[in-house]
Amino acid sequence: MKVRYYLGDDVRQEMNNKVSISGLYADNRLVMPNNYIQEINDATKNGDQVMYFIDRLTLLINISEIDGEVELEGQFLDPNNNPHGDLHNLGKVKLTPNQSHNIIIQSNPFPFPKAGVYKFNLLINKEPEIVEFEIQFSDTH
Image (cartoon, rainbow, N blue to C red):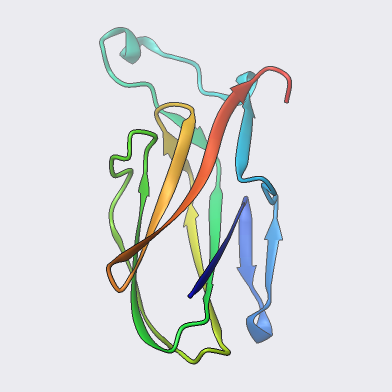
């Protein structure tokens, strides 16, 4: 089995298994300028957790070299490996070894409590395939 993944602002499925990706994060690292980040408001002074937002985050996962039917599920994990959102049933797909299948996961917006390495835990027949991406804050980007 082979799993490839790409992270961007938007992914569109086209004909003949072709996709278009806009705003590709080629190194799977999102460097967010500080002026893009939601400022801490009065609620955080009361002990509530700060939540930041990325307008749109899209993950393209391509699976291939599979012979037979597979069940697909997935869930984002935060930098502490805790669930970040719901577990999603992504359906079943039947493939032959010369076929591939694209999975497009879009979060609009993508909320996150802090910078760090986030993961998407793709379960293929309950077996995990972890894809990682990093969110950083920076004044220089």
